Image (cartoon, rainbow, N blue to C red; front, side, top):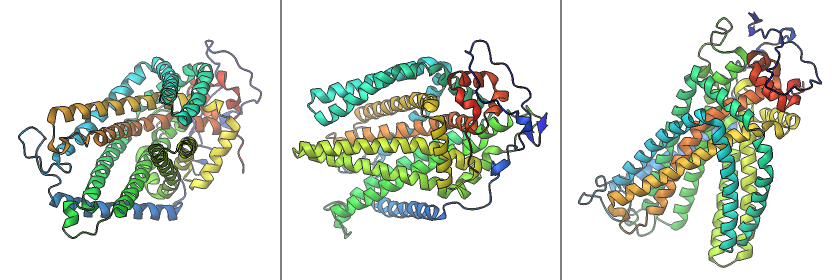
Amino acid sequence: MSYQGAPYPGPTPNYPQSYPPYEQNTPLQPYANDTKNPYDEGRFKPKKKINDPIFLVFFILTVLGFAAVSGIALHDWISNGGLGGGLGKPGAQTGTGVTLNRSAVYLLLLITAAAVLLSVIYLMLARAFTRILMHVTLVLSILLNIGICIYYWITRYYSGAIIFTVIALLSVLAYWGYRSRIPLAALLLQVVMDVSKHHLSVYAVAFTALFVQAAFGVWYVFTVIATYAKWTPNSPACNSGTSCSTGKVGGLIFFETFAFLWSSQVVGNVALATLAGGPYGCWYYFGPKGTYGGEMPKNPTISAFGRASTLSLGSIAFGSLIVTLLDLTRMILEAVRNSAAQDGNPVEACLACCAACFVGCIQNMVEYFNRYAYIEIALYGKPYLPAAKDTWRLFKDRGIDALVNDSLVGMTLTWGAYAIGLLSSLFAYIYLRITSPSYNADGQYTAPLLLFAFLIGISCSLTMSSAIEAGVSTIFVGLGEDPQVLQYRAPELFGMIASHYPHVVSGVPRNY
């Protein structure tokens, strides 16, 4: 049965007896008496208009600039034997001992494959042992903060020790509040994973974004290496007549890092918008495929990707640029802190550390905020600023407590990403020990390669995890706008949410 093309929710069901009762202060209006349907306000069918075109043009120019610099650097690097040699085995031709060769290519490709496999395994474990993993990751987060705090006090790094002492105390105090919400968070995560079983496009989007992210990461690594080899003074490429300077190397690597971080953000956020505006959004508003007489729109994922990669790409690039600039600022402050510490300036190092921590906190909050803004963009096709305003309205009405469950889901998936990054670094270390490539005869490339292996592993896992987090966040956005839909669609899930957050049943007031 349907109403004006939307699923008819039927009578309000009784909540399961296993959930504690709650008092409903604001009566729910039956969905059948609500004149809007899933397509109201441009949902799933926005206006054919390119949003935030300035940021779209800027993003395209940045990607083209990165491709041009990379092409020049890689061409000269390969011409000078940068990729000469074999797999790095003893006795093989491994090129010069000054720069990386083909062995490093094989290493990074193998790391990427291992990260993909480990990401799949972790998601399977997260579905099978959801509550256990949430308890474990919550405790691990607290122990990590305490461990870092103790380490900084032992090494007399007092500025960092003070900051992590405060963080450790806050995490311990917040433990009981978080633990009480684990059942709800676990249910949300399981529901989203079950939804993904019936919409294989979720995995298609996740794996596509994963491979694009991994490929771009490898491309970035070799671009940086080729840039360093081509424009560093006294290098073979420099002696061939190329203008070289340390400033040029630093400027180009800074631009390449900026382009890489921004593009990586955009790739992940396009995947998020595709899933929110496709399978997850349609699941919430239309119901499972075929449940209501086949009302689910045809090819929702393809349509959502088309909107996210064209009309809304400028808006996604806008939000991603903010996070990228914060990330670069934090990296610069970290470099200043390290330099000050090496020069014996504790006051400057302390100030830089505090500033980097502050910027990092802002970055995390903006990333979390943006996830909901991208869902608004995906569902309604809004520009970034209007979507951000509506997201802020949602946050103010719901409060942070209503989103703690989303944080628990993200914590569980993020810890899995860290574990995959560490395992990728371990794999890289074992590979270097076994193959003993000539370029790493003195171990000078061990630390950079382990770092890049960690980054590739964690990037692959986080890109895949973003597909799951998109579902949880989309449910919260739907609850803010139309909670009665979920009340009919999934009464058990709605009953548990209502038992913890009674305010959610009234919906978020809208500004018209």
